[in-house]
Image 1 (spheres, rainbow, N blue to C red):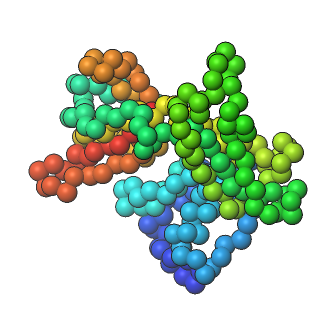
Image 2: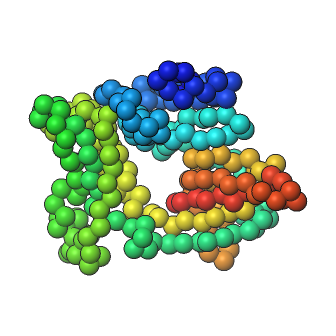
Amino acid sequence: ITDDYYGMGIDREYVDVASFLDTANWTDANQFYIDGTVDTSQTNGDCLSQILSTFQGVLVLEDGKIVCKYDDVELAPYPTVLDEENIIAFKNVIGLSESNYYNVVEVDYKNSVMGEKSDVYQIPSDIYEIPEGETKSRVEVDGFLKTKNISLPMTIANSSGEGDSLTVKAFANRAYVKSTYQKGVTLTLDLSVHNVKVLDVLQVSNDIFGWVEKKFRVQSVTNSVSSDLFNVADVICIE
């Protein structure tokens, strides 16, 4: 990001260094590592995407600085419950649909047992596996097969179920579970009152939808460009 020769040459004053240090400590604690080299023939964006894939992180622009973030399942929710009293508007409440639903997850990674050649970890390993207590597989119940692919070009793992393979399995299992909880909502908020950020966990209550402190993860925050709506933003969230 800051390197003038190999990177983007962005001045450090525009980089939230503390967020990168926090992310480094979190990835180290969770044993997410970069097992690869940067191909300088690729665009800066592609190189950064590959590095971020090793821990499913994101870079966002907040308060004029580049911030590095990670999707922590144990992140404490935003302290204020959001409801009709403090949400300007509810927009685009969506549920599961064919466009955002999937029933199989495939993770591409490099298998150390195979000499670091590309391999795929799939969940469920048998698409016609019948879950405990059920009479049909998830694919049979849905009546179709749709796959979500996660690419980990800088992750080396083994297929023996040990070590770094846990990283691959963790990402696959998290994505698989998320596919059944894909309700989404766009909230219009006053950021001067509720300065929410990308990947924050919000608790939302709404009598019409029957939500009581329902948890959503912030995916994006888009500020209004209108001068009379200063600090008002559309916040896209998913369950």
